[in-house]
Length: 164
Length: 471
Ligand code: SF4
Image 1 (tube, rainbow over the protein chains, first blue to last red):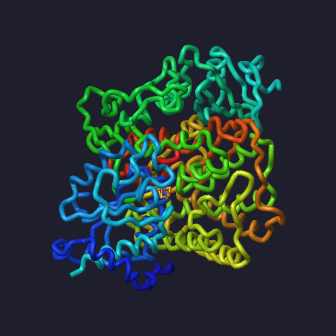
Image 2 (cartoon, helix red, strand yellow):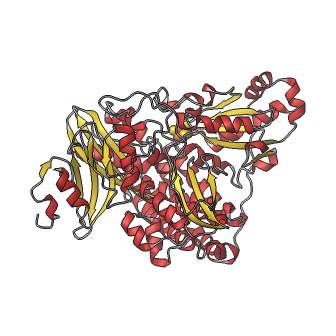
Image 3 (cartoon, each protein chain N blue to C red):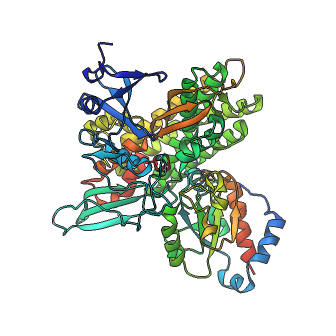
């Protein structure tokens, strides 16, 4: 019989990251958001490397549900838009539509070097340089691609910064 | 030479390694397209349009080119439907017009500051962003189901338009290009060392394959060879990448079909491989690990033993994974799902998992077992490589010379081809060909006739890459 793998233990969240995030998220939002976050992934031109690591994060070893994190398919069900890719001009409209469809309060996380500032594609004719070019970005998680552990640390920091 | 197709017998030959390129007249270009050849790729530079064929009777690889006459060249899509997207791409990037072909935009969705950005003289921006045009089906009474460009789950961005008769798919047409990042313009004018960073970011799940094909094309153009230790390490990295990507495919498919056990188990194995790669190569995807001239680094003794442990562990779990996919509800769902037409697989030049699965019925179940076979083969090969790495340097220096070369490498999706021309050590023109170019047309044909509710699982089972062909 196949053994079903179990989630692994994790370390404490970096205190400094939490503190700086706490400052950036206003008090009113804290009360309304509570302890769970629904995350919608938005691909704005990624090379698929960031998606590989995101999919790895949804695996059983990381078990996101114990932190109150879950991925949803509809922006309308999301608290957080997790944006990958350098924001190609061809996907700008799709990102803006996803943003419009996400109810307030909402957060935008730029995931991966491409989404942070365009990464190696910065300044090219076909890209705008990440979601920050058209939307307010609340949190950036760098790396090319960021490891699942790093993504998780960022999302947990966002959660903790939001708890009353 | 007498194996050559007749259309090439009087053609001018240009230096290109390891296969000479035939520079053709428009007549020869069209004549060759009617021969028994499989189109592997087509691209352009400012002065010429190129095609890469495999001549089926002889197995010869044939790079050919034609100079557009007054901006236009004979379309290949009349004989090779798979050429249509290449021709639309060539039109969007270089402005050459395929006479008798489809010139609907492909990569250029009307949002760029210029048109024909790769041409000697780019054009003004197109006036308005066009809504994508799709081909009419039937009398217009069928239902249209547009999916994407942002799709459910965590995946790539592309648009698929399904025409439905009830719950049955009558026709599937895709529109890609959403993730176009301008990679070719970024590579042009750079040294191969610098441009390698862009080759490594064409497709995250085939970063090693693209990097190897690019590096080999560079080395070919310079008539050099990477040192034996680098070649062996490249094979090792390529095998490990295919293993991880194939496990990711199986994980995603199991997740999509709701089998938590298979999803958890494959995902766990994939994660162990990735962690092994981080330990051995300092990067979970081995990005930038392969460079023109050799490799950027190598695992130390500890890294090698970590890899050995991971591969041994994987070899032991493969039987259990096979059982998970071969029995119960998961097997029932996969059986008969998305049967790919064998003839079309051959015509399109599809290789890898999807082509192998054709021997076992060509459905999603066959593709899963072809994946497991490939994982087993690669695991064994990688274990062998680990214990037999040749000694010697990791890389050689690249002279700033000129030349033209072609390189290829096997990714989890099929063969990746890179062509490039160097001018005094700088890239004058380059074109990477991702296996997606052949897989997407196959997906469209495979979806036709299927149940609409199966569309996502069929796509997932085919493993359709986007970014690598969006460039
Ligand atoms: S940050 Fe790196 S891995 Fe992520 S999309 Fe960009 S190039 Fe790919």
